[in-house]
Image 1 (cartoon, rainbow, N blue to C red):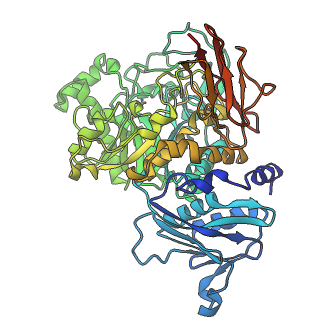
Image 2 (cartoon, rainbow, N blue to C red):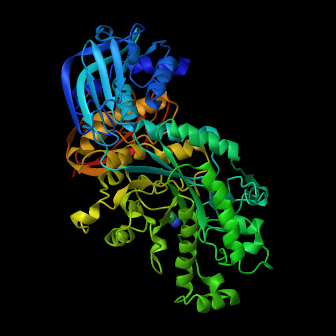
Image 3 (cartoon, rainbow, N blue to C red):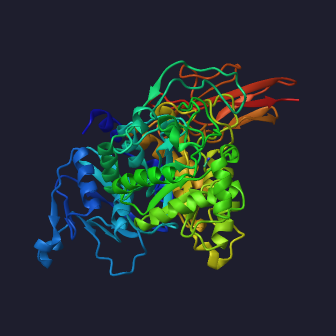
Length: 616
Ligand code: ACM
């Protein structure tokens, strides 16, 4: 076991939160949990029995134990007679569900003699994730509280997106991202591989896409949306994945029941490709360069036969690399300027009887969809693919609110909900507070993400089935480092997991954020992730009137301390910390600022909160 991991696991030996919580600390909250007295002791003598030794869940669990310093043997049950199957101190991992378990579901039973997980395909993997969440480290191995969990997901599509075009994230980071998705039972990784600012996937037939298109000369500094001055860092930026690396990531994801959905943006957000191959544009005589700032670019792919041939060839290589059902072809934010200025497009509109340039958008998407469908894949597009008529079989990702998703579902199209207005844009700030780092804007606090319900009230019962699921997006214009990507992702991704998995009736933000999350944040530390530290439980930025105050504050992360001041200075680790109720007395006609900060064992810090206490 790695030393760092060991130290953290020892600290996490007693999971006080799970003891009292009805969900036993599990995120996302399961369909049903029953707690019993007693515990199972997982030690080096524990035998892992299975009817499917090659199942990815079995391999994952035995790898997990090995990394934790345990060397338990895995035994194929088919080699054992009935008598030997009944031994004590066994963990049984089985796919023999007899059809009673819903898709991706599992049943986990723990008593003091044995642990049994029966899962339906991916369900066995999710049962293992739940088991791992219940395991508490001690010096002989782990203890697991006795329980009975029955569980399955609310939605089949549970997605998390990562934009690697605006900023590039290496293979190691992408794997860690997939890891944390899998811990929380998310199952689609939407990989935004191309955009104006960089082409990040090797295409053998068109080497300039990465030779030129993966490099930009410099990057905008500061906020574009707030209208900061035009300032650039004068530093070249580059990065792409080789096809070998892509295969490695796809296999890594598959081992964790995560399907990778590649996105190749078209017809807009295509400056990087146009800079590499200007013949893709409507005016190849113009100079083009890979984007250096954010927002929309007016130059987009021209709908010529040459463009379609090239895109088909690109997608042929892409489809060979990604075995999943879906190819995402973007379709969002397509300015029509270049098409309006093009003689070719005028002729195309007339020849094809298209209404206008909006018609070119749906013509473009339909042509690509036909090609992709003929190669046994289906398309997903952002909700702009509804413009000018929806291509048949297309799945719509509703990002500009829910309107597009509602319309598509009413037309009988599959939909994935990912509205920025519903807290699904993780590039938005997590608090309207100058202590937050630079972000694109918006406001998506944890509570807002948690509250999102992907089934809009407008949909009739028979239309709701078209909502395949939900996704959150991490656009990276303002996210240049893994630490910041983690910060914007976590803990909101855990709220997303509960939106995507947990039955509505079992959702409860108080229970999630105060009973379960603090332990998970400490676990994320143990696993080497960064995250945004929520402010202390019970603290906020507010004004209160009175003379005598008593504050009951709890750390938002297990093991962290809540430090505070009453002298107006920002609290730090050298200040007093909360050990019980804190009493503050305000003299008559005076004000005192009671400030708090959470500082974790690893040194992560929350924002400072200020409670202004006024004695009138
Ligand atoms: C998007 O955020 N442009 C899909």
